[in-house]
Length: 430
Image (cartoon, rainbow, N blue to C red; front, top):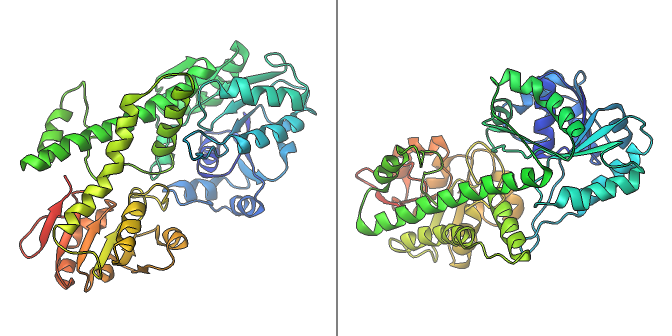
């Protein structure tokens, strides 16, 4: 099929390359000329394992990019993969989505054939049908359900494994307002389903599909926070939380995934999505106490890490190595990284901070140009008074001898990745 994707950010570029991989002809539409040129040159505009290879293979053949919205007229379906950033009160900002819908609708005004527009961005329930669809209808002059189909296909991509998540999904959710739109969506995802071994396909309404994404992320965020809450209790009792969590994860009703306790969750999805569904719930008169509690536990985890550090060294004047700046391993994304509140607090306390991350240093430097940065973890530890392990990059598990170069070998581990041994003062958060 011929598919167009409006937006060439993290989600847009990933799904474009993956749709090309399963055999579709795909065009990315983006207003950023530099991103368009990057894709057409066969380079991925973001850091994501496996994405470069797909873009190299398909650019100039089944994958191309353009700034011209008119390209959507030659396609059967368009996916809107535009940012929905958080506002201060947790609500999502729809201005970029609305602008994209206006431009898309105007382009579709000159198309005679039936076309399906699918929301790929994460939006709160009813947004597609009550906000996006009316804009598309007004700008295009098309009759919804007759000339123009509306759908919603939530993404469940994890940064660092987005390509494999898309190509080997746990489930595919297809939300549509009509049988005709649903049939088009089936056609889009049929090659992927065949390749992936026929994963479960959930066909549902548009608002239900929107809610499934929030329910999915809300549950996972709450599961992590509950694991952290239980691990914090274990810490107070001197109990090995890892053994406890591994044991309860063997229960098929609980499962082992997302039970790893640590300094908390971050990134572009969990914080934004949980805040958005909390705000949306309050708009309709419901107080989501469980989700609010998950946020509160998550916000406390960096504070607990700093309290452990203060139990061994006064940050004022101390050189503190912060190992891990990305919100998780496998990505250069620092959005809502747990390193952010930690560095803020250390700087406020008068610490001399030196940061290190295998791939996220430059992104972090843009936000914190005045702290020091090291080119290796070993260099960050050299002559440091203490070290905070914030992101569980695998290389941090192999720093044994590097800790001996510290001025005082105090290691406060927020991810329980460092091996405790004699010769270092080791404190695990959980």
